[in-house]
Length: 68
Image (cartoon, rainbow, N blue to C red; front, top):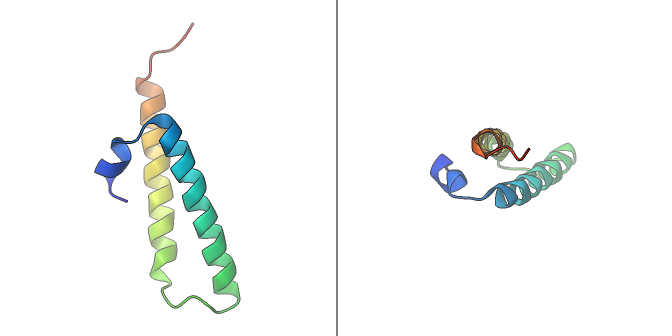
């Protein structure tokens, strides 16, 4: 996922996508332990996607008006 795609998502969509990517990372890690992963670079890509999503989530949270 690119940063532009992530910025276009709403806060709820970011949360959903974050959950999906973390699940993918977990599944990939489990497959790596059993030796079934051929494309190990996908681990790095998923970790970077998680970081981008977390950054976007924090930015949206800070820019949202605070309800008092």
